[in-house]
Length: 342
Length: 263
Image (cartoon, rainbow over all chains, first blue to last red; front, side, top):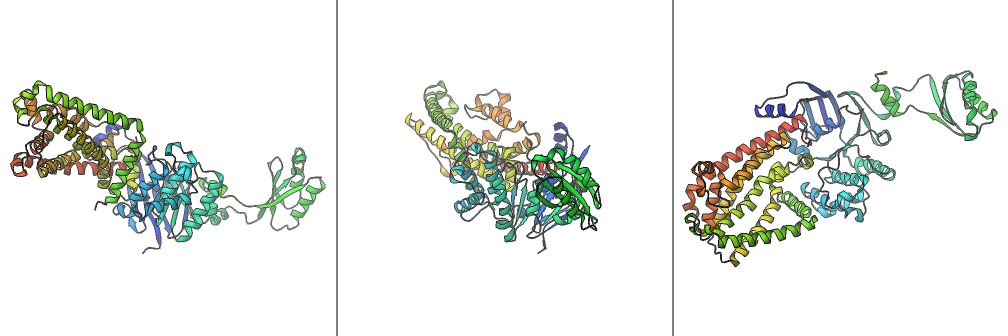
């Protein structure tokens, strides 16, 4: 058995820009694709280890959803090879579908809107051939923290967040080897997003299951993913741990601090900023809000931070917080996408 | 291998969807009752009763009843594949480990349950109007199975076209609009002008209905139905193969072009 749960090798996918008539003629004449094409995936290669929580990040239209649809067998690649849990997504698509759970971005599809969440999930329990459908439905509803009252409501009467929970419950239904989650945090309230992170890491990730997560939520990625791939214009531009991606943009010469002061003296922060900039060892000072400064200090001048803090206190400010700031994942990705240091 | 549990899943899902429309159920029940009484009344009173071709089947009502069974039981096979490819559900049906054939079989089940209920209602009310039946069970089942197989084939062709076109479906139109007129659902096709009668002979429903009427009203055993049976058998094999080819090719096309979930 391969050590990888998901393997993509030179995967390409193009969409043809054709109208309805051309599409019909192509079908009747058993023709392949022709005409103008849009690139969705371009020679993308990727390997996800078994038991890994893997994040896929990229701007809108980068190819994330296309990749998930190919991995879940509802879209066929134009070239390259793709396997999930050791099975080819085209030649062994049935075997792949028996081994995956899926949450698509448009997660409300496939549900009967005039049926309760419970009845909808019972249907999926039967289709996934679970041993005890009722017990499994209870389990997945508990995992997504859905009360009995909500589970008995018609799907159409549920809020967006509740609908997302039902869709997540459906994805968890088969207790699959590989779970695909496309924007799982969408419409969820903040409390359940915290639970979702725990669900991904503790209840699923720690049981050796592989999770392939596509999202725009950097916090979700930072807190759950073992590794991350950045995709842009159909190409995988970087793969690494969150820390590896951030470290690409950490300075070797300087360190940054954020200084938060009490709000009553914010009017004169501009003057203070100018004064701090003149301290020896300070590379850059930036106002980050009405009461926050970010100061970049040279690492070889250890007394610089003391001098800065003394100046802030001497000018009558009350320091309410001091933190060493790191490059955010968001900034790193933005820089990777802009082509800086890659 | 078709798994009964998955087929049952679709049957129960359709049943739950159906019972959620409470007003529609009441309307459907009333409609069925009124329909059954109307046809029973018409069947026992109209001048068609004396028509020579109908006389061999006992009465016009008996003749009509078989047309009903055809509509309720066999047309479900034409509709089911189209319902299964509803774009709202197709993406999910293709993501599940459920095979396409399980999806189609599962989708037709509830239609058959309703059809059998409605047909039984018609039979019961008609017997109250004095209709008697002479049913050969084996021939009846064979006629229904063959008829369903042919319609299933056409249903898959129709669904395949709809996967590509997303709306236009000439197959269902042809069978629902012209089938009723030409194949003898409501009256004998022998009453049509000769040019239209020639068209009737190209429609498989004509042979299905002929077989059904002889099996249900004249209790004819399978060997005596052979001249209607073998063209149907050949048609069923051809249409089912063509249907399966068109359907699977259309799904493949949609997967290649990324149009599975498009409306």
